[in-house]
Image 1 (cartoon, rainbow, N blue to C red):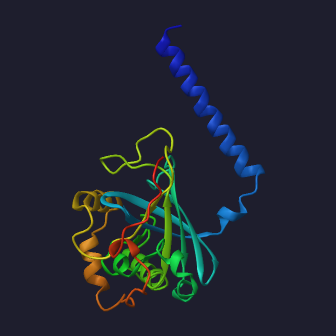
Image 2 (image 1 turned 180 degrees about the horizontal axis):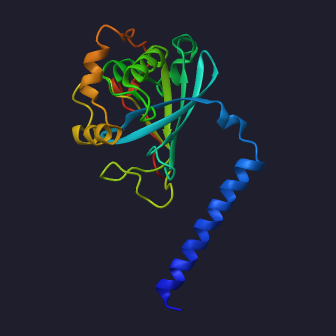
Image 3 (image 1 turned 90 degrees about the vertical axis):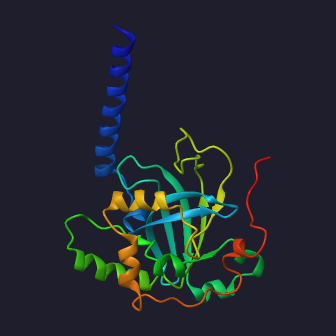
Length: 232
């Protein structure tokens, strides 16, 4: 048997094993924490110490209660997407109660929502009017919240998580706070992939989705030396 044939056989065996494991898992195993996922969003996160490093982030969130969400973040919305980050989202009420030292890890969501950059992911067959109405309701619950996001997979110079494994320490990422920060090409690629227009969403949200001024202590990276975990 040639080397290429052997490699194809090995790859086929791995795919078959994965398929069998997935089928058995769905029939036999318990995934209760994942069954609580009730929201899915897509945004773009910049690294707090290097705004030119950005990543498209697909969030799948569950609610612990009305003040707390927790999100698994992937680099794509397909079945082979990599888990690249986690985000914790809290209400403004809980943010106010945080110690001042803790607040530097958290970012606001006001601009991200108002600008049209944070969007709900919906199935292609859902009518646009229904999807928009649902999206607006969900984003009204998000616009005045605060998030702490740890990126676990490194991002390359093309803003992709291209490495085979997640090298290095976690990195703190944020949300955009004003115009001119997002990489326009990355935003276009995201919009093209999802079949949406951030510009149109922004226009449609004017006067409909309006957040409060972010609380003091949030978006620390804009005002002071940004915190980041450094490699030794």
